[in-house]
Amino acid sequence: MKVAIPVTNGMVDGPGEGLKVRIYEVDKEVKLLEEYDNPALTAMAARGIYMLRSALDKGVTAFIVAEIGPPGVRFLEGKAKIYLAEGKVEGVLNKLIKGELKETHEPTHGEHHSHGHH
Image (cartoon, rainbow, N blue to C red; front, side, top):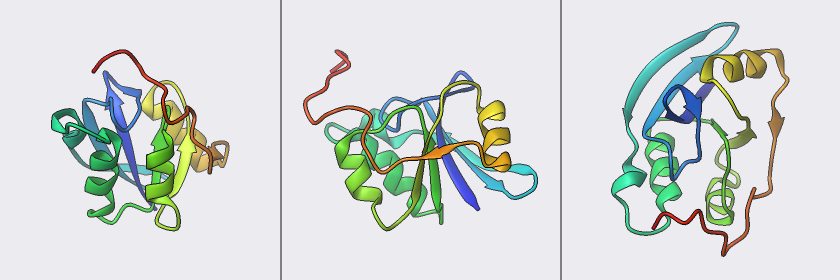
């Protein structure tokens, strides 16, 4: 399975906030395929969508995020799985392999939720 994770300082972040995007091949073990700057950081609106689309274009079938808003959930519907997790990327990937991560179909925050950095 190809998994994308928005990452800041080695920690799982939100699609619109992560400084980097890492793409992993996850099977019985984990292999980092690539890491690139998160395109969301230069986007003006619906930033998370830019990150999600960039990874989908690379064949990703699952995302691990610390948070996701309604537009991201709608965008990924029928295209990829969304797993919610907090903490260090390595630990989270281990949980994924063990089947301990929870898949979500719900946003973690509402349409008008703001993080105060615009």
